[in-house]
Length: 273
Ligand SMILES: [Zn+2]
Ligand SMILES: [Zn+2]
Image (cartoon, rainbow, N blue to C red):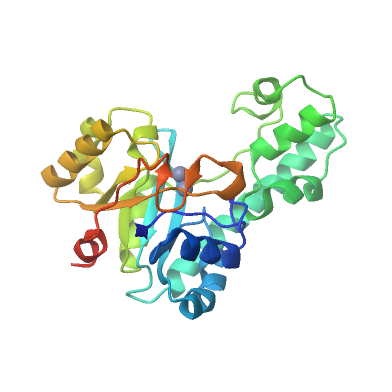
């Protein structure tokens, strides 16, 4: 079995890299892509563990990007075919920008009179600490009634606690992945805000060369639609469960939700070809 979309606890999954490899062995996944959000740390740790366990590991990442003002996830695979150095530096720069925003956000929230620290937020969000973690703390400390209110009053772009963060545009993410020799694949297109078929010409022009047609969130009809787009725009096809461990207990590695994920056995071959 193949699963090219999974997360460790280096982003928002609950399994350590070693536990994820153990899970892959148990589930019968022979080829695994680790695609943590905006970091390669989980993949790096998993390399020797996967080799020892006989699991073929695909180097991957899931980048948070912006497309026409909306957040869009972009998968990168087989990174490093042209050397990973520049790409790693760029990923670390993005992490530094996120941390810098968080430092400014804490200062702003303290200014507004809240008892909140960066350490508290990072204990929840680790390397991908962001506004949802600050919102949770505001709720838990009774400053707001719920997450919605935390965003509406303090964290949304028009709210009084908001501080700006530079996020990469979709096209830049694509360019960085392609420059590193990788395949750039639009993640779970069903979740993209906007008309994906209508966006396709622009995205293909930007260098996007794959689409995640197989995903736990996709119905059979969704998968058909995205396979059709792949055909039309000469894109490669990727697929995976988006396994996160205990935070998404319904999603099984390799199998998706109730076995709805059926990734063809020759997907990897075609991806490489
Ligand atoms: Zn995603
Ligand atoms: Zn994901």
